[in-house]
Image (cartoon, rainbow, N blue to C red):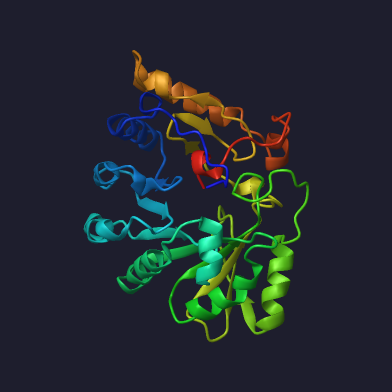
Length: 299
C-alpha cells in the first residue's frame, strides 16, 4: 500500500462475486486453465470463498492459486485445503520484525508469520514474493533465505517497479536481478540453476543443503516478455495485458449488458490481439509517471 494511501473504488464499480464467476466461466470456456486470485489483499472481500468454491468446480480449470499478504488468510486455510487450492503466494518483503512493520505500516508481524508457517507445515505449495526495495529491506535478503532453508518453499526476489510501493520516478534500479543473484551467491557460492517452465517469470535456483529454492523475477528488466501469457482482470473490470501498459478494455458494463457472454469473448480476444510486444512498448502508452498502484492492478 502506498504511504499516501489510495482512493478506494465505490462498490457499484466493483465486479460482484456473481459477475466474477461469470467472467471466470467465460475465460475457462475460451481455454484459460489457470486462475490466480490476487489483490491488494483478496481476503478483504468477505465473500471471496464463495468465488473460490465456484472456481474449484469449474471443468477445465486445472490450477487455482491465491496471492496474499497472509494477514487474513488464517480462518480460511482449512476450507482452502478442502477445495484443493494448495498454491499460495505470500507477499513478504521482510523477515525482520522492525523492517516488516516499517514497510507495511502495520502491527501484524506475528499473525503473518504464524499463518505463513501454518501454510508451509500443512502442505501448501508456498512461494514467498520479496520485492527488493533499495534502502529499505536489502538487509533481509540473506536472513529470509537462512530462515526458509528448512522448509520446502520458493523464495522469489522481485525487482522494484514504479508502482509497488517504492519510488515512482526512477528510470533504473540498483537491485536488478543480476545484482540480487550476485549478492546471494557471494554468500552462498554452492548453488545450481533449476529448470523453469517455459512461461515462468522467474529464474530459479537452489542452494546446496537448502530445502527451499530461490528465484529472481526481472519485473523491471522485463526479460520474460516474449513468453508472458498472462491476462489480468481487475476488481473494477479492467483488462490488463501488461502491468506497464494501460487497460485494453473494461468488462464491467459488458457483463452487465445484453449478449454479455459473446461480447466479453470479443473484448478479451481484442485485448489480447492488441497487447504490446514487450513491457517497454507497453510503457510508452503512458505519457507521465505511473499513477496506478499494485494494490489496484494486481500482482
